Image (cartoon, rainbow, N blue to C red):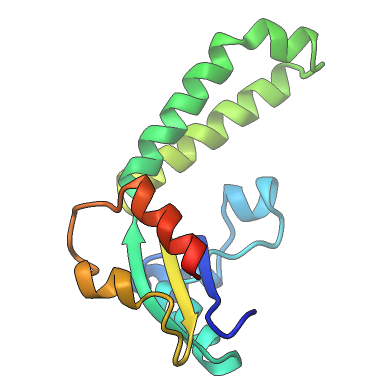
Length: 157
């Protein structure tokens, strides 16, 4: 990573209150969809970054509720193209049911906030690339950056 480099990460996380229990259990996702996977807690993720790198956390956005809506739309579109999925891609009834369950399961998890979808921005310690953004916006401010601001910032980074 360049000295002024940043890392933008999207991570599906488990709320801290459920994390210890989650670590010692199995569910549909870590058994069927992503065998052996783990959705860390925010604390576990940030702690690993701090212990194993020179990165610092600069920003967090929780887009879980938006992601629930995205999953609902993906499921709707998938089902609207069922004949294409079956005939052109060759998927059977079992796949169709599993995929619909997967989308619904995840949508419910994000909607109920039993899972989170976080966007995390990490930077190297001493990185000045984010200063123009940080000086004008706070982590909790709801106003998003516009496309021109981001493109100008990316040219300078």
